[in-house]
Length: 254
Ligand SMILES: [Zn+2]
Image (cartoon, rainbow, N blue to C red; front, side):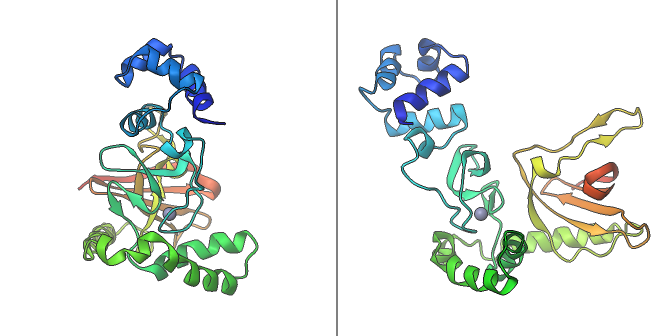
């Protein structure tokens, strides 16, 4: 699809008239009409507004001329897994796991490789192949090339260490010590916890990236602890295989 068809489709899928779309992105109805006939293409500022309005990348609006790749982990990017900048706009360079709340998540290439290798092994690589490939591939990506310029001098790593300390200080019975925290995206870990009333609620924001981990219980077989945290809170829950019967154990504001 090209830009004119994409704009038409997004507009009609969202139930907007040309007039209504024009108002939302501060142009005239005639301008919208010209985009949809292919006479003109929105300018850069308007593309940004359309991207925010519809939650799709500018790359998608332009008919996907580039294949977007996360510049930290190398994963192919589609609109659903793009990260967001601190101002809420889509970031077309990084996935939600590598960049969150305006912060880069990985500061150590080996740590990222440890996270990626098991996924690649699932896709049929041997562990050694996967490791060798990532060691050669990651340094070619923009983030690792510009790491010195982009890095925050270890501030984020120190924040993770503080969180790990706070979590371990809670001394949850049966829960092993937390050694490291990974980036987890809300919608994959947003379990429905049961309230005393019997009602079930989800606490997390599907599009937010949290730090967390999963640990097997030292005392109850088949039971897992789920740990999730960010600047604002620490959450610990238990669940059975595949997230069944989630129970909230600790929810603590920081
Ligand atoms: Zn990534």
